[in-house]
Image (cartoon, rainbow, N blue to C red):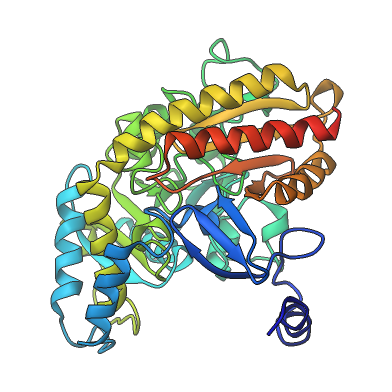
Length: 426
């Protein structure tokens, strides 16, 4: 099919809520490494990676080779039958993750991973109340949308009981009108006041992304999660770290929560874990994991092909030292973005860690400027650069290249961004 035929069929046969980027959507044909190619053969430098999913480059030879080998051996059997890739991946997660995390449950997506984590916490603590953050995103299941603190992604009225939200650590737009560090971390300490007023005094869990993804790469202060963890545990709850976007080296450490030197009780994964293969995982300590009794399966969870893809992706990350590369290239990227901020007043804030960097675009007096994001998107498309967007006000640019991105590619992307901002005339 040509581009027009694909777009026509997309409009006719897919749910209208399946959103696309750009005024005229980009029809992707193939990809390799850090580059994506459309049906007309145009090459684009990919600095969004399928929504923070392509960890080791598109169609990585080592990952696709492992997938092909496993596909010819065993494609599917379900969790009713143990397989070597399934248990090897679980063992690997136990060895890599912080603290006493040991036992895993595999699913197909981050939504399912978060759903599993919350259910497990409620069963273990025998409590119902769960706290999450405003601006957070947890997925598209009914429970995950209830956890999500972002109206655009809550597609229907949600009525899951026991879900509560507190303000996030949005220092650029402090919900309390304060300034860090004189704020005394009021956003974190508000959790205790919320527990004391909207619950019985006991909670099941607190779930948060170390850096909020769709929320606009909002990055909390260094003391934030230690304050949160102390409050959560004081009231009997479990700390759930949603690593769907921050995991697997993205922030310059293997897992995002390690940036705050915290050992969570439960962690969830998806996206970059298998370089694009559909996977989700929830890991907990043996004590917590064994609280879930009775029968359960995941038809496709722990699938031998996706488990193999995850193992191969992790192997590439480790063997090629990509966590350190993310840290170093992240420093180079951040320095370039900071220079752009000095040059263009439309950039109100630069934030993030490693290869997870965001630009908040504003008008005067920090007024959110989603129109600037829309214009920049069209210009960067013309420059053949792919980026992401997010934020509650749709005014944040999200930049997440593969972890094996090079200095030259970082510099190329920065030049394309510079040219695009210059063309905006702001």
